[in-house]
Image (tube, rainbow, N blue to C red; front, side, top):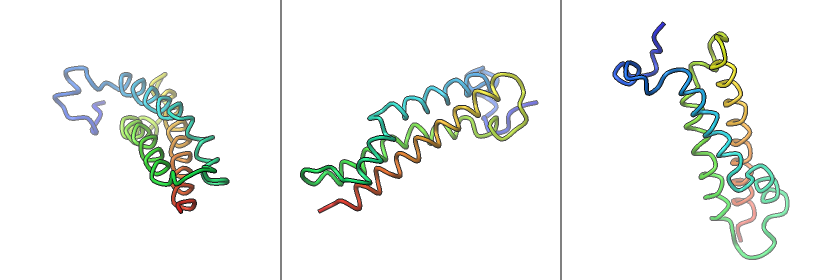
Length: 119
């Protein structure tokens, strides 16, 4: 069954197969999670601010920068994560989606913390 979310020329070239999209999505989601320790940083920015100076724009940029790979990861795995499990690509896609949503949660915390604690 052909994947309708991938342009035919890329699918036939083997560039965006379900397997490659699953692995790329997981790699991007993990990269977003590890960039700046977004969950802990976002929670700190939300609860206590930064303690010194005005880092509100920095916090917003940090959140947006961490969210970007997570959004790309979700885009890559969107079909497989919603469909029936069919081998390891489906499982990896679902794992990528879970990690990407954790990154998005941290990014939202960072942006909210940056907006709340801007002086």
